[in-house]
Image (cartoon, rainbow, N blue to C red; front, top):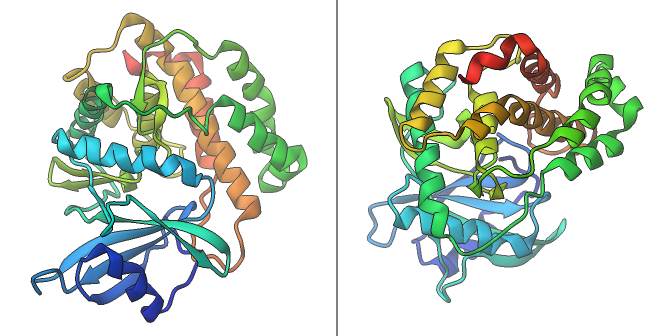
Length: 329
């Protein structure tokens, strides 16, 4: 989440009018993340009691043609009891709208606001709950009819690495360029092709989970969701949850709890378990590459916090060390 496009109060009120959610009370930009402009919206509500929503304007990395997949998935999962925000449809039943902005034509959607807080330092019991919620999501999406390839898969890691270039990566840190040169060709060679696939979230970081105590009240930001290797989603979540923010310190209690929680709902096959170290290396490479590209290309005037790609290069080194292969057992 971030804010790239700035909108005045009158423009914001006009955008909200077709949704019938009541008069605009306030709109606050949200600075986290890097791909979209987001606002926390407060309205008077339809009965005057007040209501809150998230308004998202899609800036880059997200194609308008993919929005029916993402937004329809939210409605599909919410209908099956998953803690996922519903899409608010406009007066014509549309999932999203397209408008003209100073930065060109943009799509936007209004999403249900869910209670809960994102965790800065999750506990093992909270990690266990997240693992279980992720597995429940995988099962609930089994009959989702739409299909979407992973736009942030192996080919995109290579494209981003090429776009950054060895010199660009080295300008961030020479160790990053070395990491990519060492590991990316091996991941491309060894990436598994025959593991179970499903709808995956592909970005379930702590800031994309809302919790009240040990209960997951919301899984949000499904804008990288796709059909891909199911266990890869667990690997992404493991990389996101089981290290300190710098990636320098592994958190074994969170690791064990996350995997145990997942398997309490959907047990892993032996092939999936054996592949997890490699899948986790791929997850770390994916975020190292997208962060490196964003580090080099984020506009100077964007209300956005750049994220350190080295935090995931360190995770990759951890997962690639044979001494750490047993963390998923």
